[in-house]
Length: 149
Image (cartoon, rainbow, N blue to C red):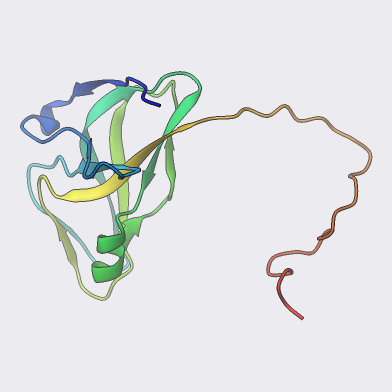
């Protein structure tokens, strides 16, 4: 299924490629750094990097900003609030919060692929208070409870 998302190129995004799927089977569109000057992210540091556009995600959908596996593996650079959610009513510039978990400074350059964006349907839930919950095989075991003897 394909949906249409309207987007506006912000001034810092002029001249950059639009977000795009790299291959026919790609689930995410590559997002590029829309910066005028290189940004050095120190080990343990973080930076908000503009993707250079704003958009109108259709109602009933969200856009998720996720890390690129190559940056994570080679440099320890990932998306801090992963996945970051872009709601259907947000109209501001899309930004990527990069964090450097590696041992060396990482330099972000203009046009570099820094994250990927997945568009997904959203299911809304209605919460209903009850006096008690029905039983399950797991029960109320906490974090790390399953799969341990």
